[in-house]
Image (cartoon, rainbow, N blue to C red; front, side, top):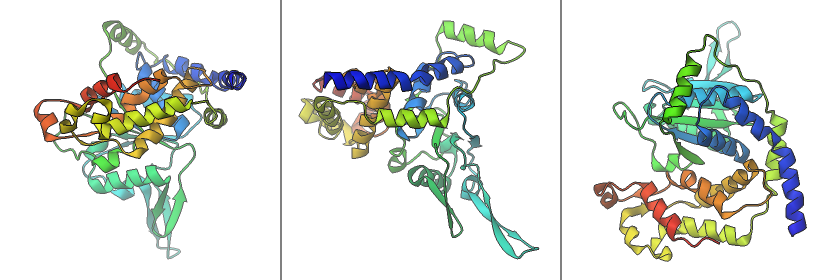
Length: 329
């Protein structure tokens, strides 16, 4: 087994070379935000989608746009507004008077990287159209069904402080996002670097350093990364503890949790931990990989009770206690 893990690690080191190139290129434009960039890479490797939450002005859109530039992939940005229609997203049929036939005009969803800006500003019908495309990786226009390109990743942003005129994503739909990443303010040093970069007469340019072939090879190797049964059990224990906290000797938390994480959380936590090990050039998963991605996988999957809201508790407060209490292998 040790020999196999060593061989796997060598394979991972070889196929993950592009990761450092991507991080280096993106850092030419983006200061900090290492966590967000890594989470986008994890989602790409796992065929998942990312919900990005942060106050305005934290370079969420710029990070996604820059990431698309370092990949050899198509990119579209959709500004979600209350008057947006599903056809504005997926496309529609147009009648040709000369031929007397309908032709299909594809919408902006037909791109490898789709930035859904302020996703909570669009009404339920548009959100449903987007989330159906995310889940099925295909859309239906009229009587025709079209496959979406590969790779296909939706990076949706939402503003947590401006609630007027917004349509919060329902719990069942938000569960389809593999990761929910919270973007915080930069440090003083980072803000100084941001000021200096933005003052340049010509903004820094990035090169394409990642291809679809790189991604496909990485996905194949990542699926072979070794995960011990004890770590698999650790993942299951963490997820089931969100439904039955008494199993982790945290019975006092039960009153604060209305619904725990779904089985989708276990699947994504398993995949994200492997991807995190891949980014660290390792052919095996350690408990720290699970901990590193655990908050981003689980934070949007716990529905709190009225008691938790009354005491100003967040899902992160609950998760921190669970991570402290569930035994690490």
